Image (cartoon, rainbow, N blue to C red):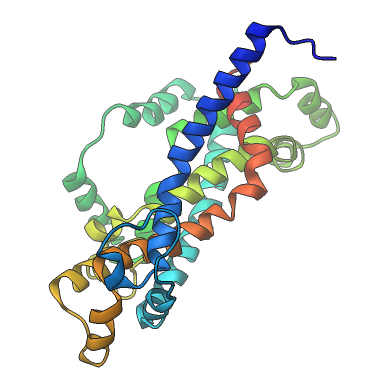
Amino acid sequence: MNNFSKSDQIFNIVLYTIMAVFGFIVLYPFIYLLAVSLNEGMDALKGGIYFFPRRFSLENYLIIFNDKRLLNATFISVARTVVGTLASLICTSLVAYAFTKKDLIGRKIYNTIFILPMYVTAGIIPNYLIYKMFGMTNTFWIYIIPNLTWAYFIIIMRTFFEDIPPAIQESAIIDGAGDFMIFVRIILPLSLPVIAAVALFNAVFQWNYWLDTILYAPRGKNLDTLISLLAKMLTEQQSGLISQAAATRKARFLTPEALRASMTMVTTLPIILVYPFLQKYFVKGIMIGAVKG
């Protein structure tokens, strides 16, 4: 038996319609890029491709995957994402756990030091000078060390940790457990939702960010990520800087539009595949960590 009133039914229809339109708006650019990437490059320049490729071809992907730089860029992107995310989780969770201790000496000062950069930043040039002074420029560590802790994630984790019943930690202390043992054996297992949410944010940032490669590792040997390699390949294609052996083939098939669409798919799909594994923790972690209740 339908218990909804007529007004409720109208509201649900309007709501579902709005959500369907919004979902289509979000999804359509991805569908369009997929169609262009699977279409012959020169034919795609004519336009008129909306949902499906007009002249199906895998040549765009074959040319991209035949580029020797792609394998190294993939390795750098994966290494940066994995190492950067794990290192950031370890440092952020440890700092957040320390901030839950009311007897931490200088707690307010440390809190101010971490919160202040959220509102005031030094800028690119001072950052570059600092990174250069510590020898991080043009090295792999420029991707890892500057992103070890983020104040926003510290706040989320700290709030989540504070919601864990103190009685659990007190019972562990009575049994002789120290702070580190409590953190590893009790806090972390009970904090999987917020850890998964922060891990997802970190992984997406590490995978998609490219500006640090351009600014701080322009002369780094084989330090290009997939995103920065995409920018270089677009520049080469538009300026005609392609190898003579592949010039005819690329000129015929790989246009800037096709290259942009194909590389976008190559760089986007891996991180999209991660979402289903963390989605069940994502919303819960953000809501519980952001709102103390």
